[in-house]
Length: 197
Image 1 (cartoon, rainbow, N blue to C red):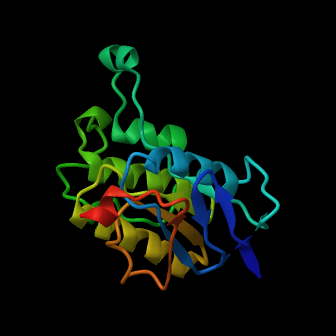
Image 2 (image 1 turned 90 degrees about the vertical axis):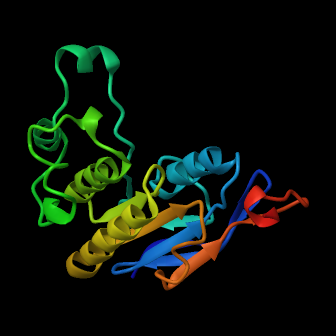
């Protein structure tokens, strides 16, 4: 049974391809790397998570976006958020090993504000997967090795828990890792920076 059936549609000057997402699948949508990425990503998240209804997209199971961890500067000054408090407040316990990252990075008392992009992204994905088997995620703010590590974590979860995921990517680096890889087309002759290099 389809978790999500996208029959293809258009957002502004972008043609979103048709695809099916089933349990046990990861679909990668390549949005390319240009100034439209975040705006297009936000629109796709609202559609694929079911916030906004589009007749060409039929969703039968929940998908949640792994939001970037944002900190309030005022609160951080007086009461800094630690890894332990973040997980206790936002996540349910699941079987993903925190030891995938160096032990000095993800100790319970480590402040989130002291973490680099890779462990921060891991924590947001951990939080999302603890609540739902369906994930929408990106790899913004992580380095190439972190992207591979995080993709592997999601892939292991999807395989072992019969989950499902959509990766909204801005580079073509996961093309060989993902069986279901699709490029979003640009209409009206607009060229992406990534294509012109």
